[in-house]
Amino acid sequence: MLTESIRNTDLDARPWPSRDNSRVPNWVYSDPENYRRELDRIFYGPFWSFVGLACEIPEPGDHMRAVVGEKSVLVTRAADGGINAVLNICSHRGLEVCRDKFGNGKELMCPYHQWTYDLGGDLIGVPFRRGVKGKGGYPKDFDPSRHGLRRLRVENVNGALFATFDERAPSMRDYLGEKIWERLTRVFDGRDLEVLGYHRQRVRANWKLYPENMKDSYHASLLHVFLISFGLYRIDQDGELLQDPETKAHNVVSSIRNDVKDVAGTEEMRSLRHDFELNDMRPLASVKEYDDDVTIQIVTMFPAFTVQQQNNLLQCRNVIVKGPEEFELVWTFFGYADDDPDLRQRRVRMANLVGAAGLISIDDTEVFEFSRAGMTANPDRACVVELGGRGIEPPVAGDMVSEGPIRGFYDFYRRVMYDRP
Amino acid sequence: MTETMTERTDVAVHLMVHDLYTRYAECICDDELEEWPGFFVEECLYRIVPRINHDRGLPVSLVLAESRGGIVDRMTAIRNTMVFAPRYMSHAVTSIRVTGVRDGDLLTRSMLTVHQTMNDQPTELLLAARTFDRVRIEDGVPRFAERVVVCDTESLPSTIIYPL
Image (cartoon, rainbow over all chains, first blue to last red; front, side):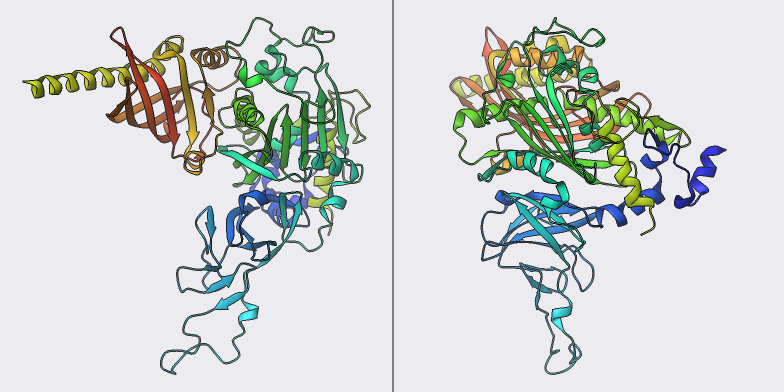
């Protein structure tokens, strides 16, 4: 069977179904060996993962759990206000030091044998270091400075926190490139942030489907009947598909809403219906809050972090990998600390549209599970990714139906994953 | 005498509330969603909220409807616009209790466990929750003026499509 022969072939010897990125083999969405390499080369490699918002740990001593790859990390606020991230595993016996999602304290103490670390991860206390009544204890040359919690590099982008295990990672600004940085800092613009709530859900599908979906503006006008029926998004809207020219792996989908009655070019959308009207319009009632007219802006960072503005609705969508065929999607809804009650209420109402019960987002996570079902059983087949061409050049201005950003993702992904280091 | 009357009233009220919760669960599990908005008064509040948001006082819900019209909208979306795999729902509602009275409404609560059965999968536990509700009796008919479902299941095993 072809299926078996793929699984038995070494990863580096497996042929990609096309020289270009117009084909993506189904096995990249299910293969365990490929997934283990993704952990090593991507999630623990020189790339940045989102670990939370600084406003979640406002006070000195505050700390919270986050995840990089499959590893639990603790993000802490030191006495001087600085933010650190450390691996949440005791150097002694390998326990997760901290189990609470949020906590506060001057130090981090492992409950098992009370090895105690400061908020930067330095080991500051070891019981019975000199033994009991002068007997036993640790060897004379035991050096606590060699047994701190493993530190990660952290960067704070106007309140959004990113971490990496790999010192080789470029600064976030260089990592994203100027164009994407500009859009990320349009939302994280330096104002203090405020968390409005969380959603978390498991999706039984490969993690890459999420960033691919966020890069794919094509599906929104077809799959999301709700969005279309109520005139929230249509493919004929003015918009932009931006790519980081360096990596092609970070990108932005942005859109400016047209008049709802302007339906030119929508004849091919079979799901376009005009027969629905909401009884309660409050979840859609937005006000202009940025200097520009952008109503939807989706920033997708390699490997798998998205921050989206949809009118007044702001959310981080973070993908936590859970094996080759499952991920957790963590939604952090936020606003700005200086929002007036009216604007905050609008954000809260619009949250109905997205998340684990979202009128729109449900469609996405449901179809990923359909993808998993199809792809896992057919690893020898490949996806066709040809809309807008076969290359990785950015879509031409005004083209809002291009799979170019997905091809760009795979161009970068293949270099990271399969090129000889 | 008075005491007996009160006891009788309490029992009658309890049965009425219990019956409301039972019929509500049946409506959803029988997939008769068109009847679902009728369980609410016109000016109502319906929320499904993750426990972490509830405990930390964060305002975002999983589902929010601030009127019966909002509930009709959710039903319309489930029936017409949302894309999802077919499934059956099974609600186990226990520990229904009237905890007090406020402005003529009964304050009630219950424990809720929801199982979900996809058509080609074994039955799975979707969530465990507590509900904190407010029941208004008008013309002898009890309806929810408020229903707040607080989900312990912070990381949901899948999406919440159907009402809780």
